[in-house]
Image (cartoon, rainbow, N blue to C red):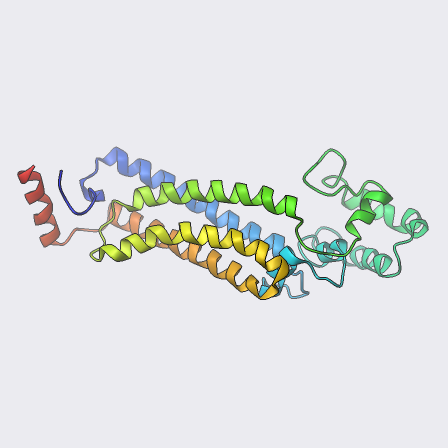
Length: 255
């Protein structure tokens, strides 16, 4: 069929629209949880409870003046133990992190609060089961190491590409009068994914690039929201303009 636009939602069978709706609802829920995770894992690193540009810069480039342990306790791990125990560990680090003080006062806190997740059996998290392991987190905070960045990058690139490919494959059935706008909405998240990942590495050496991390992530969110809501609306509530309907039926007759 020779037509300018893809087949609109209103011309798809009911079962296909139900399939698309189900997929979009699950993807939307997953995207919402991803945003919650990003906030929970990055906020508070600079002492501000909200997510800030400084938090992003610290996450990828480090504080350059504190330790990884301090950064975690002030940020994503701040709610995992009582405030007095949190301050006790930070004070211990600032006072030199001696092994004697660790054995007498600090080890019990780690044993009770931390080693359920931070143990030798979990290769993805630093182990806090021993003084040696704790001291590796008490080193200068230089942000995410290169191995972790590469590991997260390939997961990010593959995962988000699949998400936006599925979402865009559904959105392509929506009617947007300006074709350039529809193409922009579809292409924008894929460009943003590349810029986002590249920005992580640049932020390690140039802190202001954290703004680009936030900007590219925001563009991805806007693109997803547009494709999500436009698709669902046109799938169930939208009626094509009469002139577009006529063009469609003329194309069917010509075919």
